[in-house]
Image 1 (spheres, rainbow, N blue to C red):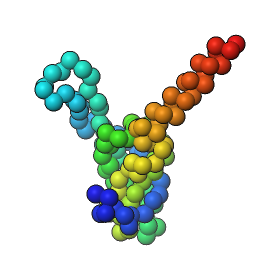
Image 2: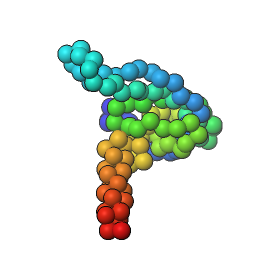
Image 3: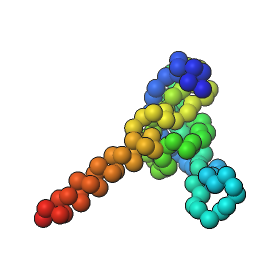
Image 4: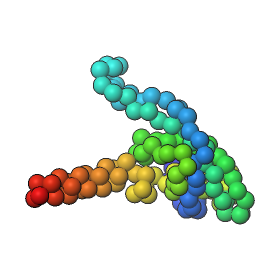
Length: 116
């Protein structure tokens, strides 16, 4: 996947709509005791490299956070504008980057409360 997208163009788009694509259960044994992860499909509007406004359906993957309708999202777009995907390495939507930023903010908030 990396080599296929290395010439794709980075841009941003706006989320127009979303729907649940699947409920992913990380349990290999089929044990449903734990929670499931909801993954979405999004309709995203962006300006293609050729300058045309384009709307495409984009799948959320496990390493990206849920994004709200109306939000701006980082994208990778084919030079001809016919395909796009979320820029999963962008810290605004990368699951681990968002988690780590939230952890730092929580720790800072908690420390300030402790200090009075």
